[in-house]
Length: 441
Ligand SMILES: O=C(O)C1=C[C@@H](OP(=O)(O)O)[C@@H](O)[C@H](O)C1
Ligand SMILES: C=C(OP(=O)(O)O)C(=O)O
Image 1 (cartoon, rainbow, N blue to C red):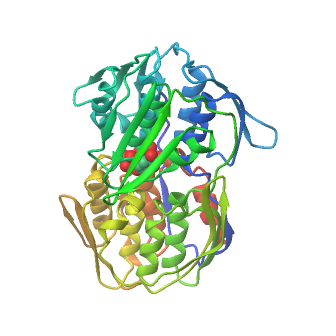
Image 2 (tube, rainbow, N blue to C red):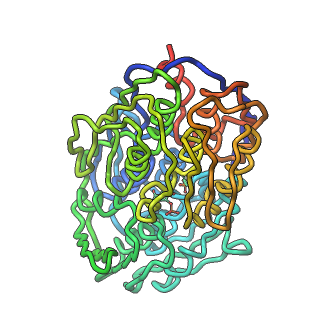
């Protein structure tokens, strides 16, 4: 495990943001592209993979279990996979860094292979709950030992052949859903997952792209997913679209900084990821999708965003899962709207890289924004679009999204906002600062 030196930084006004920008490849899709190509037999090629630290944790883990993963001269990644059922016993514990997605999906993959794997992670990841994956994976026969409360460090003893199961998700979590589907790949027969509330469906879409028999039915507002094991994945070419969760920061910046007009190119607008964009439109934000197209089964568009006068809004429940990672930057955006904005049903935010409700409430108070925390929500008093007071130093708590959210607030503040540590931003958006500066130039 590496501990990087903290990188304190200040963010103040930079002038209107103008012109075009791109964002790193989608983090969720990148994890899956690496895992599936590492499991396929033959050579896959991935274009647009995220270079963020979380995705590199997945790459290192798949290498440790036998895949060859190399960067080609043109920047694409080439992966030689091992074949389903043929993951190798890694020599050492797998270091998942800051990445919940890597940890939970790989726990599922390992669960149906005849190997024993220990997962470790940084201080943030070591606080996050893993029982949500341990419990259903125990039903297929895998065995676990974990730190108290079902946390990392954690060891999975996989079972082969595993017993196929039919699961009903207790939390709306694409990570739990995906862990169970990935366990199903090397399990004989049918693995079934019912999610009462639909979550991001990148695993289902990409498994089909790799030739796996995955069927999705809809009933009672939920989704019933059936996967047929033991699945032979076919090596494929994958194009990873831009990350909407990274684009969210640029879109928010353009909306709140007067005079801005920005085009964010090639972003995934998967309906189960695009909740924030719809919400910003509901608030009166001038945000439109241009040139909508398809990239290997994922919908993609360029997103044009201009500075706008925003109205406060109460977040409709139906949008919550499709903007789950965007709440920190939405809270900041709401601070510039006219009136008090509210969101409830956000209990999951308390178990992300930080407690994102508490971290945002504390940070907003520090920059002069009134916000009121409830057990599962936050209400934010907006100022109608004037600069926030700013000043102070934000504790980013090893959470990239907290750090980036307050950096954006600094772009429309009377006094610059200090962030105690911008290093975590490299987990998802390494060129964050450069991208903002290039739009301001
Ligand atoms: O499946 C995924 O790629 C992710 C699912 C979400 O987590 P949960 O499954 O915990 O909701 C999200 O917050 C995370 O950033 C990525
Ligand atoms: C929650 C996040 O990621 P993960 O769960 O993979 O750490 C995130 O990127 O906001």
